[in-house]
Image (cartoon, rainbow, N blue to C red; front, side, top):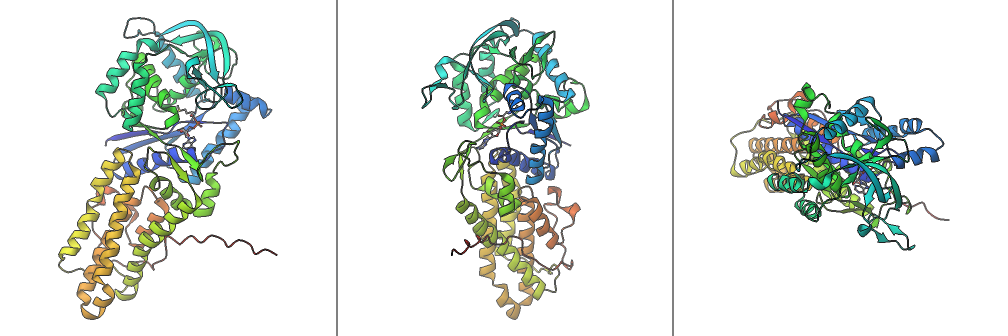
Length: 521
Ligand code: ME8
């Protein structure tokens, strides 16, 4: 069986989970479910990033030790998984022993090897420069901007502080040509293409060596052989992807099966870490590089940047309570071209629910299944010879698998959904054109064929939508009497058996009606 290893960024443990976190992992969940249905042995990883100065500061502010604090708040991200219905196979915490061992091992592997120019990958020096705790990132003076308060800030808006301390450095400056050759020979390694161009021009401008240890605080993985230093949190964080695959046991079954990862899904803000530092660290340690990193865009809320200080953070729990899980999953991946920025608004959410889900898909299933219950004895109808219109519709539905497989391999979730809903629309037009309610009186045999074609089409639409809306589509496939063991894509061409008894139909996608505002007075 072919393997597929997909990862989300591990989340800063001190944050409260919001829609942005939910989004990255949702995209991974849909791909993981798709690949499982498509016959892959999938390993889907998420987790929490628990070291560094930012987390240490939050722990102090909460009056707890970093260990107590991270144990407590890491649970918030596990809970997000339950809220959003994620099917992850592992949840890594960077404070686990397996990860500390792995981080120290990659450090030693980098230290033991030379750069492409024959020099040591790691050397001891002194860091004098700017650091943004919020981003856990170093910045050059030239990158800084002046905030409205006149203070220097990182391009992300984060405050920066001047740091002077002994530090180990990674000799990133020796890896520039190697990275450019790597992008050239692996054009799929970074997506979308605009991000690859940005990264390439960043590397072409010349790379500075990277500070990879800190001495002025203690909450991190200790540098092997020099315990006054803790590793730079991003070196430790990125390493989570190989820890979960069993590193440093590179001969182990798991590592051989799943590494290199097929896809690291990330937000556009952390592309540089994943496409410059990470491949360089891995190559320096003699480890294979991931096959692809894809960066999605950012969500705003009703047109405004989402931030704690604006108080407009969207809580996934509230969203799911209000609209239901599957509509939220559908909306997030349908509304915005994956890779672009998007805006969450109540009106856009309600429009998608009431148009795509209730009017188009829900109504198709409802009218066909209730018609079958009333007029075809509540069982899968017996079909006769197929007419051209029948073959056209079944052909369009049958082709969906090839289309969505190709779209999802490019992380084009919106296009996979667009293609599926084009078949929903075609099926609705077919119902109107064939008018089974008229055939019931004039030609019952033809009516049975039309209903059969529609049920088969709905089955294929359901197959395609399973990864996106697993619960509701599971119910749809129940209504079609498709057994739980006949829902993987190896059953794509399997067809409904005439005469199979069907359960009583029920609605799947109710219209969303906003609560009437309470009457005043
Ligand atoms: O960066 N819209 O963690 P993080 C869309 N610990 N995505 C958003 C978003 C928004 N408004 N806000 C955040 C880190 N995200 C590191 C990762 S990986 C080795 C270490 C996304 O908790 C963001 O783009 O800040 C990123 O992919 C993820 O949430 C990062 O969350």
